[in-house]
Amino acid sequence: IRVVLPSDPDLLSSGASSASRPPPRAPAWLPWLGHTWPILRDPVAFQREGHKRYGPVFTAILLGTPLTFFDEIGRASCR
Image (tube, rainbow, N blue to C red; front, side):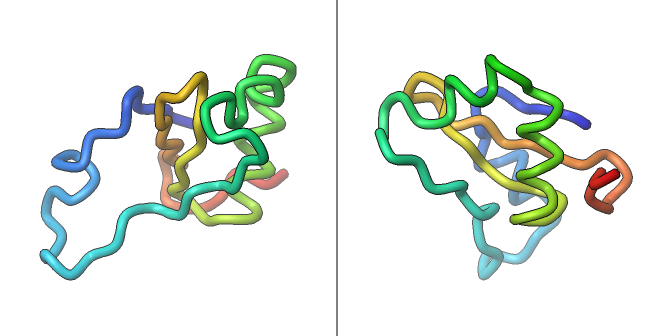
């Protein structure tokens, strides 16, 4: 599992057409706080659950900063 901090639009769109979409963003109840507590409590479980729900690339919020999670081998690590 790989994390890029902060989300870099150039990195995410490199090699992609201009019509490509940003990665899905996990919804959060408090916009600035975002997913801080679940990430700090159990980061591996948070990433696995995110990959199950949103696919191999998704974005979450940590203290107002977007974090984009990548599954290195292109398939969700859902074991």
